[in-house]
Length: 230
Image (cartoon, rainbow, N blue to C red):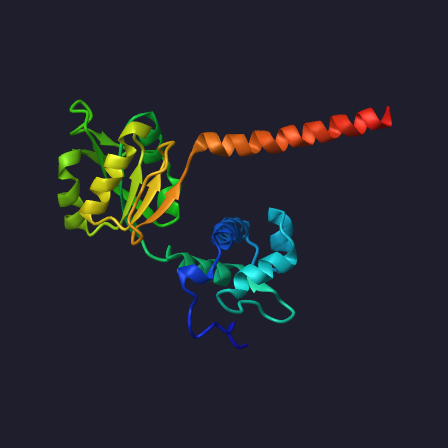
């Protein structure tokens, strides 16, 4: 049986909507779960149903990157896992630095999911002298002044910010100056970066606001329907 056909020229980041990349990560997690459960194949209908998407959405998202299914079979789970990891760039191990080892930073250092998905936090940084020199979950904590040296020595391209909002921009500037090309910002503030540096903002309060909106909307709809019925 011939392998799935792939597009000869992969799309650029500008060609693919961010929502598609977000869904790719969800597909990957679900496929990995299916592989762990011993399932060998799946299809767009099953994969979409498990995640709350239509089968057409699944096929459309994957079509940005090629054709991965087999007629009469669907997708081979392990094969599609490998393909999506290659698309996302997680078929290699990425070294990451993190600035800020407060409560959130410590929690992130202890999160094992990063390693499972191909990310390894190799160094943490803080301005608190009492924290410098410690090792948290086997990650050494360095003084912030050593940032550029560590990034250069380990050829690190990704960084994480877990500092208070007031310090986030200055930390971002130092990460950029050190040569970091992609930043995940957990501080509840928007940071300004050069166009050449990619960013992802993770504001946990915003995520809860989105959730509360959905729950409130559902509650209000239920109340309205009950009032009309009465």
